[in-house]
Amino acid sequence: MNETLFRHYLGAFAKENSVCEQCKTVRSIFFSQDLADQEKLDQTIAFFKDEEELEHDTFIFLKRGIRGSYGPDGHALEVAPGSEAKFWFAIQLLYPNDARLLFAAADANLKSVISDEEIYAPLFIKGMFLKENVYEIGGEIGAILLAGKYRFDYQLLFLEQILKEWEQYPKDAEEEINELLAEYAFDGEKIKFIQLIIEKYKPV
Image 1 (cartoon, rainbow, N blue to C red):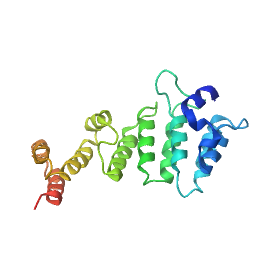
Image 2 (image 1 turned 30 degrees about the vertical axis):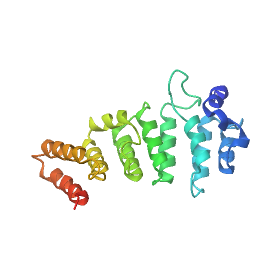
Image 3 (image 1 turned 90 degrees about the vertical axis):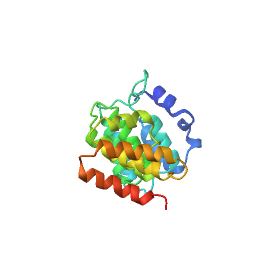
Image 4 (image 1 turned 90 degrees about the horizontal axis):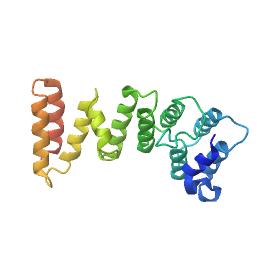
C-alpha cells in the first residue's frame, strides 16, 4: 500500500481519535503491517459479516481510501485491477438496503476495468429508488443509464420523481408524460407501467 497516498485520501480520517470504534477496527486492518492489501480487503469484508450496520464514519473512511483510480494520483492499494470494485460489491451485499453502499458499489464498478452494465446499472437504480431521489447521483450517471439497456427503468424512476411534485410543477409533469407516451406509443407493456405511475400521482 502507498500509505502516504492512502493517508492523503483519508484526510482527517487518517487519525484514530477522529473516528468511531467500528471505524477504528477497520482502520487497524488497513494500517496493519502484517497483511497484504488484498488480505486487508478480505478481512474487512469478513469483519462486516458480524456487524449489524455500517456506521457513517466507517463508510467515509472506506469511501475515501478505497476509491479506485480517481484522477492522477491513482490507487493507494496494491491489488489486482477490479479488486476494489469487487470489495464494494461484496460490502453492499451485506447491507442491500443501504443506498450509500449501492451508489459506492455502482460507481466503483462503472469506473473499474471490470465495468459491467448488468452490475452497475441495477445498483444505481435501486439506490435511487431507496433514496427516492433520481438526482442523488448527478446528470452524468443519468445520461449513462439513458444510453443503456436500463433506460426505461431509469425513465420510470425519473417520471415518478417529477409526478410527486405534479401540482407544484404541472408543466414539467405534463412534458415528461407526453415524451414517454410518445416514445413508447407502440409498446403496450411499457405504456401500462407509465399509466400506473400516472394514475398513482394524478391530482384529484
